[in-house]
Image (cartoon, rainbow, N blue to C red):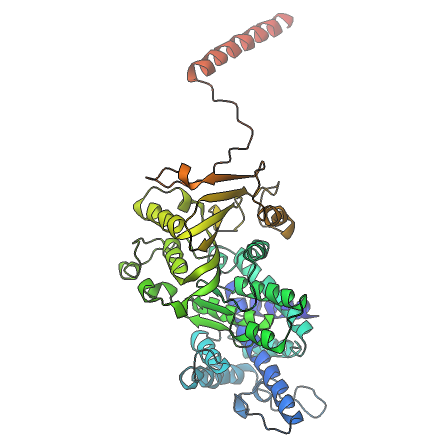
Length: 488
């Protein structure tokens, strides 16, 4: 039923002249879903307070609560068409009153970690793009059918929401920045193995896939142990996952994604991570675990580059410096980055490799196949490192799923299973090998993926050999043609 509801909403958005793409579909679905969720949350908290003989203080005043503007119902529990806004009246209310009211929470909230602040942040950044009030009325009715009352409901909704994010990522270049294949994320998390009490950070959060999957992993670990206490659940909820995101839409999607996964007030900050000088990062700003897929190919302005010791316009290289500085000593990281970071000979690339090798134990490099990231058009690697001791040895693993990767053949969890298992012991196989840092050229610090265990290819023939062979083949072809003519 949930899946059909999402499809119906998409069909209506497709018809509306204000929504032009998958990015618009998920953006518009997100603000409506958020308000539907907020209503369910407030009703639940009001019921809990009533059972305790207390009175719940609603976040929203009556006029702006879901049941009053979106879905006013009659005594039979059906939409009251006599008072329900629709058509131009509904759009005028949403644009002129609802969004401005909600946006003000950003100024009045106590701090950035409250749900009030998140409300203000979301509705300061998003705009209603649904131009037809009749279309919006239909969407509100479909959204009202979605239940948020149980963890099972939220779990199913989170999977559907993830599939929308995936579709957006597959839709083209602009959407790719929001979606990292979940099988890759899950494999990275298994290797890093975050524990309760540790903090997990993503400074390029996008749709918060790394934070959401980490939450699922850590919650699962908690449920399989004897430590599933109220305090530990609260720790997971409020003081474990942290993120930063620059883009407006990605921020909203990330907030909604975390909420659907069960984190009520996500610690996601809407800011340009690279606008912060790494020299200002103190111990209190550092994290135990960093998992990220920073944007690559971007170019940062000169003033932003001044925040970093290694000056470069390449966004991903700046993010790497930020992540290294943001990691606690002994902390663990897994970062997706384009493979040219291992071999480029420019000063910034060489300096970045030295920074990683000298200040961290870069123990694993995972080489991903082409086509892992749809629309990105680049080959990527994942760097796994622990901050503190310098690197002495690196284990490489070259992922080969045995098929061409693409939209119809995406990465799956089985593809990643061997890597996760072998990483525990780091053996030499046809797909994996070890190198010693002492054997690397100090001048270039070249860490290119060069598998020494693959069967040697036949050596290339010299031009003279090729020409001689061509002449011989021409002679044989001429003789064959002559013999055919003789038979005619």
